[in-house]
Image (cartoon, rainbow, N blue to C red; front, side, top):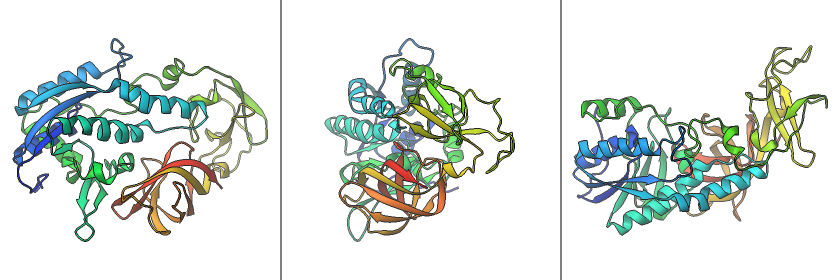
Amino acid sequence: MTIRFPSPSPRQRVVVGLSGGVDSAVSAHLLKKAGHEVVGIFMKNWEDDDDSEYCSSNIDFVDAAAVADVLGIEIEHVNFASEYKDRVFAEFLREYQAGRTPNPDVLCNAEIKFKAFLDHAMRLGAEKIATGHYARVRQNAQTGSYELLKGLDPLKDQSYFLHRLNQAQLSKTMFPVGELPKTEVRRIAEEIGLPNAKKKDSTGICFIGERPFREFLNRYISKEPGPIKDEKGRKLGEHQGLSFYTLGQRQGLGIGGVKEKGAQRGGGEHAPWFVARKDIEKNTLWVVQGHDHPWLQYHALEAGDASWVAGHAPAAGTLGSKTRYRQPDSPCNLKDGANGSFALTFPDAQWAVTPGQSAVLYDGDVCLGGGVIASAQA
């Protein structure tokens, strides 16, 4: 296939965030091949578990340094752990303690990777920064403003996590692999002999790693056990604390053997149980049986803490939307985008819309921005 290199512009000094993964490594290679002066930075954002089997930071730095060596570029190790703890992790805990389910990757991008990292890169004399995200940046020829576009690989598009980026950040940002499918990125990595060409993609929240999520939260949030009830008010078991559960959750409920005879709405007596509601005042976890249960279907939501890529809210009307990362765009109607909040209605029910997660709006491939879901209505 024909590879479109990251920039047709004259040679620039570009600082690349090298994570130790293959995407950022190939990004650095493409930039260098396009003629840019490339410098790598490894960001250390978490240090509470340096000696833990779950913390991969040290291994990732070794991989990033090996990539820099193969590419023939400098690499600097920068510690943003203090900024991360203050700007991202503290908010993460506040949200969980309030019974919501936050998305720390969204906040990390806005506060660390495209703020603390960007500021540091500018101090190093960078004209641009680059990361291995699957997204694209385009400058609108008519308005001169910058647009955030989906990555061309629909299975890897990460614009959802980047929707809080603003004009100043996008004007300094490059996403070299956003034009490529992941299979091509892997092929390039192998072709040029990158040591991490076959490295497994990282998953989950960066500071939790591969450890069980509940085990991690136990260190920071106290347990307050309470009843698990079904839609008829019958107690089915006991939860370990509402903070440890999220809407739509199926695994880890501890009630797998409980069956409701003659269960309807999506599955019969062997249908799985899902978390449907969390009653903070009564410390009760409500569950329902069957993926398609009405309690899991929503036709409207309200969101706050809105952030718009263009610097202002889009006009009311029909747009595309995502209320969670791995889902196709769903049509929605934007009712109100002013005053830092907005409301959406959906012609087709959305599954398990979760307070604390992000509602992100699209106009085709263009990511417009979004906000934090405050509440949802059936």
